Length: 139
Length: 267
Image 1: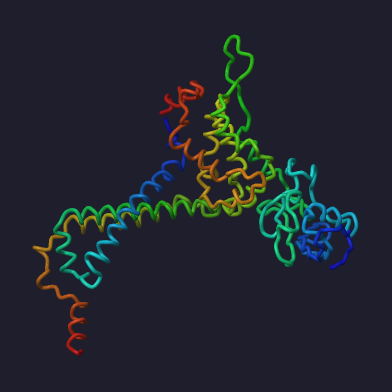
Image 2 (image 1 turned 30 degrees about the vertical axis):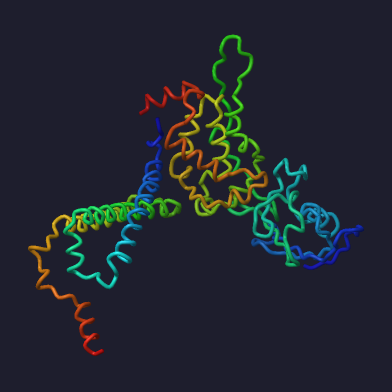
């Protein structure tokens, strides 16, 4: 038995659960990008190659969903602390939830539909890479 | 106003001059609060309450403050001393280190009535609103009194020490932003009577601590635990309430079956 129906209980519980998930996800992401992958290799081709593995797609999708909902939930909880804002709670919540929903939909749409084979990996020239080539040539 | 008073001198104690900056308020005289400075010759082991009494008796008879037992039991002389909510009768001059002025102000977040006296009614109404009492279970035949096991009592022992001084509630930033927030004091009482195994009406309390002004406005800031003059783990008690809301009451077999049956129907 629990009293999750008492207002606020579920939001509070979800904040803890998503927070613990995010710590793990962001830690893996950080280790991967900064130490294994390397920030200097962070270009379109390499990310596209990384996304060939479904594991990283799931990782990024989870990070997106948990991050957005955790953030929106946190902002809602902060807004509820203020009595004056609480009067317009419905509008604020609609605004926050709409933004996070749109972000999640766009983000997961890209994660699901992205396919480097059909895309323009070969044609695409990274401006970062160009800049580095130029600076390299000057040296 | 600055007055120098010679209080007393005792052998063997360090005497020093300390400045007391007391926040004053008298709506009949001035609409805003102001600060009066009193310079007194004091010892390190003088209680703040003794100094306030000295000031009132010998320097400025208009100073208003509440005090009753002067031994940290009645909880009527809670005030903000050097930025922390504490009881004047338990705080010594030496607790404010150095030679800096000692600031004394009324409790924050509640209307001030005069000088260091605040209106405690809204705070006590909040405590009353969570039903802080035991509704006894039906007696079994031959049973003369309601008993609870030592283990169960140890869970709530910390919370039973509360003296209702409101030092915790008035130190809570959540209360400053939302004056309707139940506050740590009411939530400690709620935890104490939810976890009390003799209480039949725990579920009524649980319903009252939820909601917009309820337990989830607590963001574990921890000011209340620092403020508590009885060293109650206030934030821990609020966490216990949250745990009950999330998981139900964990001592299922020991706890009143009536409460559990009601809960199951609800789900």
